[in-house]
Image (cartoon, rainbow, N blue to C red; front, side, top):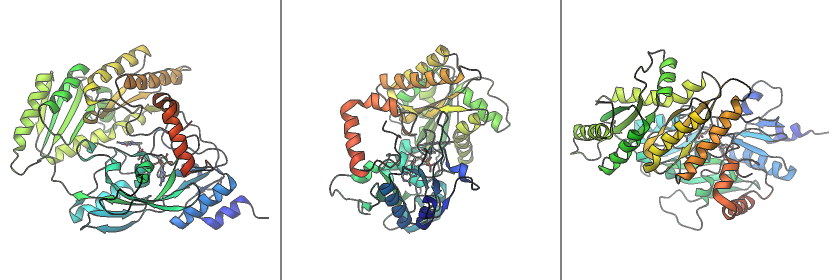
Length: 457
Ligand SMILES: Cc1cc2nc3c(=O)[nH]c(=O)nc-3n(C[C@H](O)[C@H](O)[C@H](O)COP(=O)(O)OP(=O)(O)OC[C@H]3O[C@@H](n4cnc5c(N)ncnc54)[C@H](O)[C@@H]3O)c2cc1C
């Protein structure tokens, strides 16, 4: 008698329960998500194998959990009982780089940073740069529409997706959009896949846009602030003054200290928050010193305690590397839940003040950092010890989403809905939009097997 595992083994390489490494595929980096045992972990090596697996799952009504490298923080790739975890990690090749078209064709398991490294010697650049870029996959980045530090200037993953090959819930392989810069044939189905968190299809190939490699940032300005209101003023005034930073990042003193401890450096004694603005030449006749000085003046006028700036690319890289380390450094010290809310840039100061209020109300330490120029913050809550630690952290997590919505923002700017925010999303979008979501899901995945329970309740 052929068992389920025998059948799956004929379709693709698999890992069975109990095999070495099996447990590594059951969850992402989220807290509060409890994976349940899948039937198997499938490790397909081609689109044909992905299509065969999804077809089999549709016939047998077995849930499929698409997975990149599991760096998500919202439970998007958390396994559920009786499912197949479908990891595309073995499909990690660059298929073609076309410098004339400024396009690259890749498989979904390719790591973001490997793509950057491969195109840079050709003078080309793939801009989306999640802080997880050394570990996260292009397929995962597409499925979450990942953003990053330099997305203020260059845009998010969506802005670089030209065409996608996708296996939808029936097992059919579709090519969405042609690999041409302009294509308006029909509804933009490729855009629906971007950010769909594995609920509409499995991305098996992507053609991505590249841009010419920009020159290094020429000035990095760092303002230190004692309070949150002046941070909000500085952000607004910077754009009002016509300045055009390529990155504008915020880090609070709790994170500064966690990174210092992680790097085994002395703590930030001044307990100040930091705004880091990176300026690039936008015109050959620009004088970067002028932009640096203008940014410094805005920060001082807004109430910065100190402002330093540097024209050294090495210093800029060091500051941004520390910024990318924030979540890793804090979560190395204990379980930490990462929020991800976004508000209009002009409301960022109010959101920062609200986060301080929420921390006080729930007697919690909340560490906040994020992409200030995009109005996208990551308040992170180390879960306190004690029997009510999770409940207090959860209450603060929910309260921050409510504050963001009240300021005209969203419950997630880039980390996605996954399991953790499905309830909040459905309340924020309301009945009619949720019905539209359901209809779209039904059209792509009539058997309802693709990542069920994620994004849509
Ligand atoms: C330290 C750290 C820093 C981070 N910084 C950022 C940041 O700056 N910006 C940001 O946006 N995010 C950030 N993240 C979150 C995470 O890295 C991103 O969401 C990333 O895009 C996930 O990619 P992944 O390959 O790990 O996907 P996974 O975690 O494996 O999956 C994420 C979602 O995508 C789906 N999926 C994965 N691959 C496919 C596929 N081929 N087809 C269809 N669906 C698929 C999964 O089902 C799941 O819903 C960070 C995470 C960590 C741990």
